[in-house]
Length: 472
RNA sequence: GGCGGCAUAGCCAAGUGGUAAGGCAGAGCUCUGCAAAAGCUCCAUUCCCCAGUUCGAAUCUGGGUGCCGCCUCCA
Image 1 (spheres, rainbow, N blue to C red):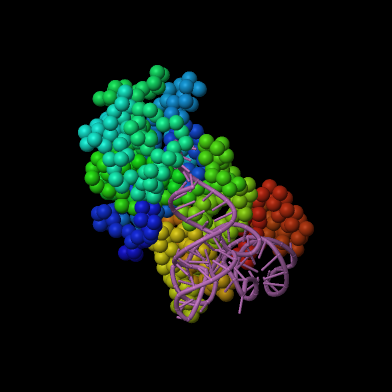
Image 2: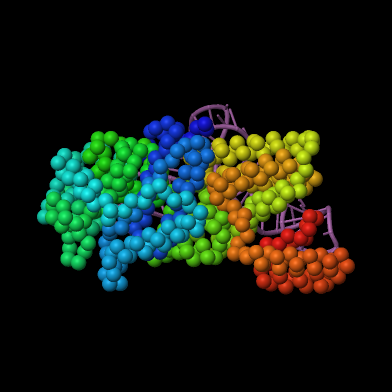
């Protein structure tokens, strides 16, 4: 089994991955607060973790993937009040929207999607435990985490407690004993969702849900905790404090954070109002291209989005996709027989390249490099065919490599023709065979007219030695 | 102000001590009725700047400069 190296935000170094339990990988990825449409920024961690999980499975690991929905939150409540519906109704709507978008992106479903609203008891128990251990205190129905009681506070974000106290830009809640303390439980305000608790009616603060739910579904010291790097502070820092103060065990072994998507060099976010809706992108671009774009840069780097970016990337992507598509067609006509030196050489190259892909993904999930190697494979395969190679073993190997890595693991291929009924296919067959007849009769004027008019509809016809192909 | 990160060709982007992957764009050629697709060749003596360590640095150290993120809800 290949050695996996992972950059751990906690140690700020690449570390060799050693699972908590041999052969098993446990993963908690912070999900979304469902109060508005899913945007491109949300797609990044989802697709990155999708690839990581697919890769681990290919390596033979059993994976357990938990992703939460923070469905009790100020923004949801506000939205609900604006629309005059219940908070639950809002979160339900946007959870469905989120899952539909992720399905459309080809992201595998998590094993569990725990919601705050369904884990109030677990949260209360955890808060209570922290209060008993004097890591937390109640004040007029609120409960705060006593940051000073956890000496390692700041270890993830590399913040010093003193700096944090000074850096507070907001008015400090006078009920807090320390400016850096944070709420575990908030007392109920009129008209807001509230639950009974030992401290009176109220609801959980942000952060505590992830501690409670990750503990419940994954236990202590699970393998990976992930999310966008904007969650490092305060969210993940506070999770660590809560969980580790309560259990005395590490929360997670490896902290993996993905970079932000920026728009005009500014972070894409709901609060800035500069987000690109995922739903809109999915209507406009193929799923495979979207994933190709998201995976074209290392997951920790920032990724710029701008109008026309997908079009630019589309040219490269379609070369990769077309190569796979053609290979699939070629397989039907492939020939067997003895392997020539050309065949032999091609097989060896493909073998080396496949190892390169595995190495790239093993080294901190370097999808950008894996894609680079896949392009080399495409060039080699095309070149092989250009030289007259047609051996089934080689074509099969090429197809296997592309299908597995570009297809099954990275998920950037789009092999099915998009939005295309069987009827269109049949009609195109008729049209193209007629055009072939015209070309045989050297009636190029008419043949070109057909091709040009199809092009106007967005249908591209290519005349190849194996006959005409078409694509949208 | 504190913390973290980044700076590689016109653009996107790998590369963490051994002499610059890959993609797009561009130039030439092959194939082709023409086109498209595909292939071949070319396209960074050089990696923001300045010092240093080293036989050797894009890669390590120190100092600049610029940009991004976090410190407030955020993927």
